[in-house]
Image (cartoon, rainbow, N blue to C red):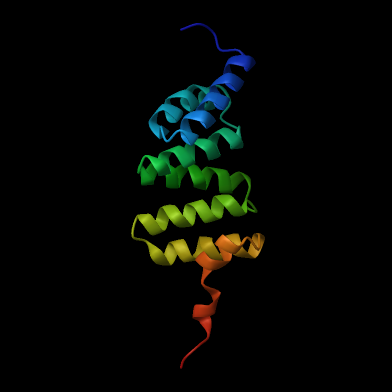
Length: 125
């Protein structure tokens, strides 16, 4: 395999975005793996790969990747929301709820607020 250049990494990242948009998450992961190997600190590539894992129903891999993103960017509302969706899909609703609420606290995006279900905290009836 020829040496990777910064340009190759950018091209692969952009192509992975296109593959994800075309609903080919496994193809996106294949393109992102060498990008992340070359630049493990690249949070954008890790976030894209986490999304691809989620779309491919590789929930444990998605969870781990979202956690790496959140270790680096704890205020990333989207990563909290996406991790919440991943945990929800893995039948872990209590853990998911925590991340939904963090996402909503960081960003008042209506989708995050709906997922956080703050209205469910009205107390005992």
